[in-house]
Image: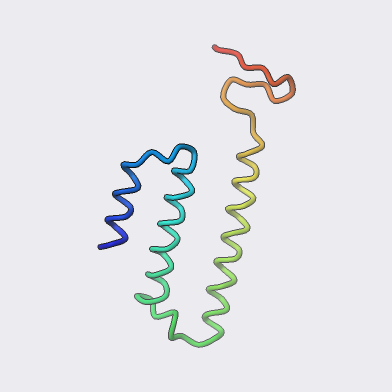
Length: 88
């Protein structure tokens, strides 16, 4: 219930461009709690824990590459080479 409350509270706050970062952090914490306790991964064999850690690492790589690609794209209506914006 605490996680849901924090999620709802964060949804109504304006953190500027950090909205997505905060939302992903809350979602990551909630997903970690689900995997560790409700799926009993905390008490599972070491090999299962290794698979979980590797999959989280792979997810982090994919998210980092996606966000890096998104950051290099030109903004709406702006030309990347000329650094000028136009309005359609």
